[in-house]
Length: 422
RNA sequence: GUGGUUGUAGCUCAGCCGGUUAGAGCGCCUGGUUGUGGCCCAGGAGGUCGGGGGUUCGAGUCCCCUCAUCCACCCCA
Image (cartoon, rainbow, N blue to C red; front, side, top):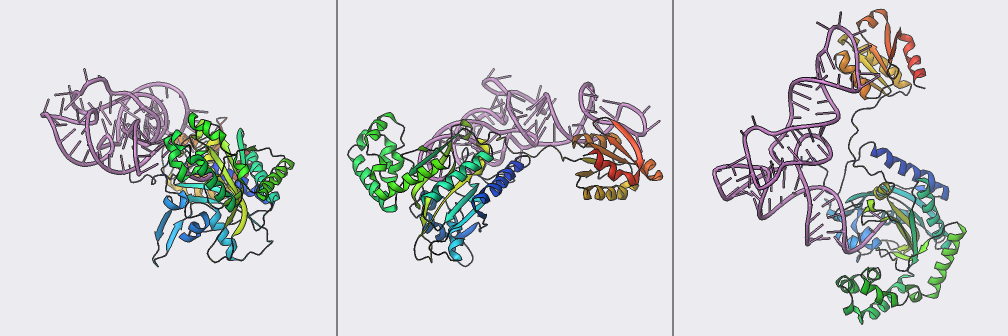
């Protein structure tokens, strides 16, 4: 039983679950183009440095979560842990100049070597977008509005949209230092986690839920005040644009997100529902600048990623995926002797030409057994081909629901079936 | 990586303080006279009790290890 299970943190997705995935993907393909985005399919493996330089070498993701390996040429390759870096690499590879406005969306599997938990897989799936080349609060706002549009289309309700600005790279470094200095003098009154975070992730410290810590944190200088005037202005304009688009986010002063490349606007969509467990963010993104091997200067962009399995959970239909009990069909074709097989196959082919789902009996079994199968596959029609029918060049068609049946000339059956199933 | 949870039939699970051939429900197969489903009835197939080691006269049950699962921390979508 053990060896045939998918490896940890991955799963097989069966119907009817698979259909729900297709719905999320189709909705993305329908919604994003309305904003000028077109689909880009990038490789799932990239050179490792695409991610190290793109995401940031200090990031948790890069340091301990990447699936990296050496290929036969000794190059270090990595299964993509997120979509942005690869997209940026693709765009950079065909050249991008100042003032270019490139908009793409993508979807597919991502890989991170984390410990699996509720809403967290090692192979997980994202749909995301990137608007690359220009720096403008209008784009940021439009991107967020598009995210809301999408969430609305898939029917997600009761979620919260959180936004914040983390300023420019310089702002952030400076703010980090200021905060660190400020907390350093009070850290011995704070919890163990916070002490650790002082050095590792001071922005996380700001989110600490321990009450004693909260009292101290509440007195800390507001992050927004540590940003440059230009950054604050950019954020202000973004908020205005959002409002004009009919989007009303919550401002989350401590939201910073974990990837190094973010600058200015960052945002996240969270769900307050317990079926998601601790992983309550279904989407996240922001404005960024990414450095890539070969590009002279960092390329700016804004984008987000949606966590597909988390969205599915948030939509509240997260039954475990298992194969449906039986094949479903519109028509079941029963055969009562070997002599009927070729006739049955010919008929099946004709019916499928008319876009009907047809299940053909594949061995000679009792009538009772075959009718049981017809019932189980939820066929509306059972077509019976036996010796009697063969001799008269007719077929028997049984309307399962009404338990009514009739024997009609063979040449009429296709049209009769099509009509019965309309 | 650190903690905890669970692991018995295809699925959901029961199995008391160790004690004969390991159970239920659902599902599956076959039948209930000739070529007819659902409901009902009868019968049947299907289990290395996750794996390995140990304690014991005896282990699904106790101990150790291991693998897998789920959850939390961490981090992120």
